[in-house]
Length: 75
Image (cartoon, rainbow, N blue to C red):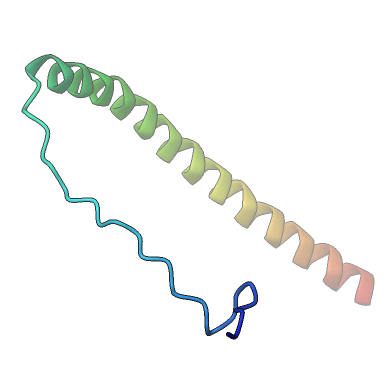
């Protein structure tokens, strides 16, 4: 009889059981908490957008300054 080595093609493949999706019942309390947390996050997202725009403007200023310095160094 041939003995199969570990991870050998002679070894039978391992079959994993399939987990079926079971929808959870609607939870009114959890939905309210989720909605409240989203309402708290929206103003923070607006602040973040403004901060990103400010950083992008600052980055453009820095790029312009860098180009001026580079042209000054070349001359």
